[in-house]
Length: 310
Length: 185
Image (cartoon, rainbow over all chains, first blue to last red; front, side):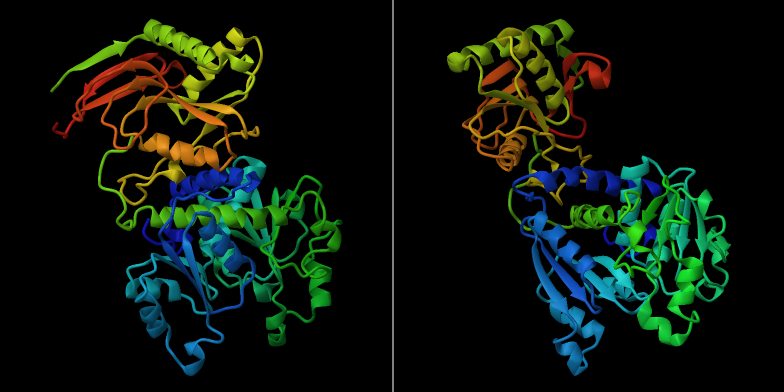
């Protein structure tokens, strides 16, 4: 696999291989030395055009735990503020020959474009409303660790599907892993025609009890000025996942950061069925597995002569 | 070259592992093997390590720590292999500081796997000593690595392959030498 641009490009076997490899990295977190030399001598460039805490941090940590060198680029404070285009920035930074570029942008399709402008391996860390493939992979990994398999499981994705690249990637990934996906939320926040992706659509949480997994999406407060819902209070009344709606056997997920009291009540965030912290931990090992995947086939820096290994 | 022959059968393998276990005890008898630990290299080395561990527990009449290492992420040929390796989790669930760790692998060839294993082992702590036990040593070393315990020396050409099969994975215990297709000596 040269790039990771979209979950759509991955088969079930690819997803399973990445998750298996992530599981083998999990053991490292308990060691005194949390590092392996797998990507020694490789350079990973984190190119972030959007604010991000957990994604950027976990990619940086993932690369460092594989012994890669990491360079971080933020659009703010860079030549982008002087009007430099994405292409020129990529060409400029690409002149330093990074082996992989992890890119987050507010523009759908940007990761795919960048892959045409540089020989580096490209990992899409979120492109507009399009996709966030590593989030989907870490969510599948978290569920596999919790449930063993997603085959035949009922997954409900609740909330602001319209603005969510996480939802789009997760619908594809969960279905590839054998889950049945239901979307639920106010009609204004469920994109018209999304049933074409093979999922069911509900406008109430009345049947939420049938779900094995409830995946709540963040209500994007910054978009509320556009009046997608009358008020957050009313949204919470109808669509909040809380102790009244969530059964004790259901697994609760959320991509973070959580708006406590809006999409989730504080009690369920802190409940044992919430795997939100496990998702964050999975973020590092899954991104290690992805970086290893895309870089393991790229040409290594000259080190040792060719020879069959023992 | 079209030969494919068994050089160790199941009985030979069992006797060989018993001998290796005895040699480990003899060489480490100072403290009655109290500071010994066994670590196998995935996959077949880990299986042979479990067998040697069982023999040592019987000989020493006390338990000793056992672990296994996957060295995929320590290899120096990432990007040079046609296929990505299958990765297994490593398990070294005991402190190795101050122990004599016997690394176990099935075949010793260039020495690169052992180099990776030593590097991986040191990420878990600082053993007092590291010894190496292999079922078969086929030569062609590319690094200055020498085994402490050898089941069988098998002089081979590079155009041959040494296949170790174990009951747990392959339903049979045997070591075979076969021609490696497409490679000339």
